Length: 470
Image 1 (cartoon, rainbow, N blue to C red):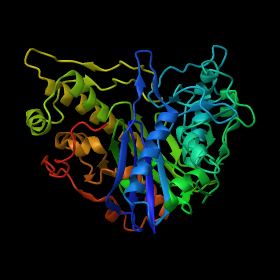
Image 2 (image 1 turned 90 degrees about the vertical axis):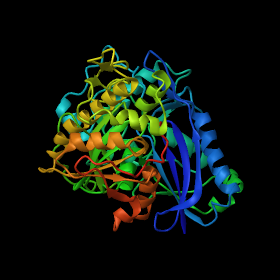
Image 3 (image 1 turned 120 degrees about the vertical axis):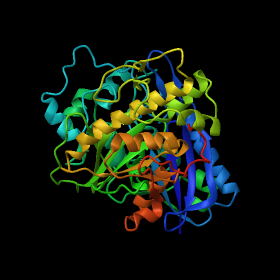
Image 4 (image 1 turned 30 degrees about the horizontal axis):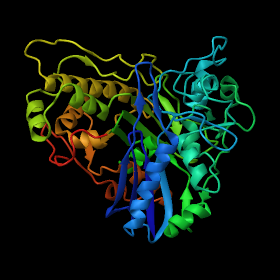
């Protein structure tokens, strides 16, 4: 049996085929870039039907190459926090709001949770523009017609492709409306959102399996009998694909955005570990939780710098960055896209200090990258307080694969912790496949974790990766 893994990211959608040991099949990868509409008012949206069309193109490409033959299981890693209002027919009433969108504000008459600390402990979230308790009321006032339901991007897409599309507990936890211990919709959070009966998706039970609608089974006959597993949040999938499946290893993933996360065992109904005030918590599945912090900047710093600073590429950029010592770059604030919760700083909060006539574009990029490293280091201390010890760190994601300098900067900021690097660029899809298979045994064999910076030495892995991942 082979596995088809779908990775529904913010800047691209990908389909990849893996064998029964969750090892990617060479050449069996299809990818399409997607456009995120961003403006100065804080919008960060995707076109739902356009995104679906890109996914269909990926599957058409894999089908044309014969790569879908033998697929028995379809696993999905999908972006957390997206939301789109639908009409009664299931069609979008506007664009999909992504995690990048900062426009939602609470209604003027709303007062928030009765007990903010208890709300945070139950849901792992805050009453914040990032989550559905604030986004749903805001969308009601901005949708083109009264919404019949609210779903995330993956539920919208699965609603088109599959016979049924319940929301996984992993995706539900990213809404900020889920009681993480009870694994049910939280009554207070739903009341704050002003949600009515039937406006939220049904929650997928453990071991849920879906199947393609007949029209798409005809289009991709090899998938006609494949079982589709409940989608996992992309951050949780990245942890698993990076080999960070328990509280001994934290994953620092830098893709379009960045995050530091720790997975812990916590079966549904069991007591949850204490949650520090400044960290979020979601569910991986019915058996595990994931705790961490996230940042609006990551690989998008590269994209911005390439566009606006006219940076050199490839070896020339490597050489320019080598002149800057990690940990000693110019002071900077990397929040170009604003704060992720619980912070409230809006888009455009980035800053630089210490600029002089001798400053170069590479100095500016290094300062921003170093600033993100320091943010991660501070939050990792909070994360480690939940397990009362320092943990090993695994770096992953396209941006750190592309930059040996950034890997060394992370190693310097996170010292004296052991820091390693996962060389697999598709940690999200791989993680989704591993979870679907339940293959947590020899996790390093799946993730390709290798030794990384020791004593400040450079890493050879990733030199052939593109320098400006999207």
